Length: 104
Image 1 (cartoon, rainbow, N blue to C red):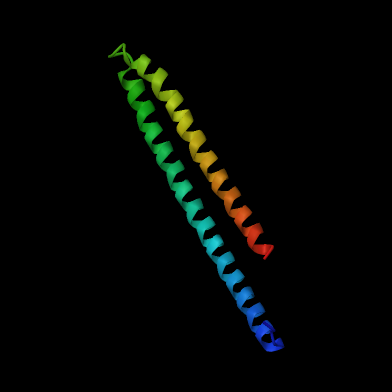
Image 2: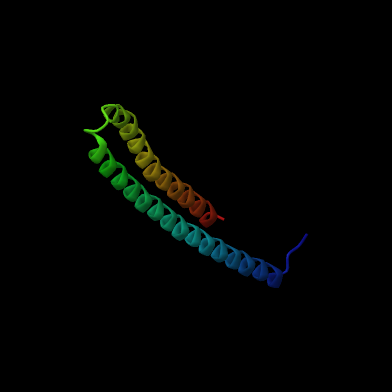
């Protein structure tokens, strides 16, 4: 198959257009994931504020509440680690995909 100059030019422009569209989609995904993780972090803060206030209020009334704290606090820390770790992992994958597209 021999490519004529105009066909080669058309394919190059199609590839450039395709690459630009993919990069725009990656930017859109990055923006939406940032909003998603921001919402997750806000909900985490609200949930833990309510939890800590309730624990403080009922700590003296129910002696078993302190054992609940031994379970809840590590789970909260794990949740926070997963929020930040998930965001980092997704951003790494997006950057890797973006680099792969640039090498086309």
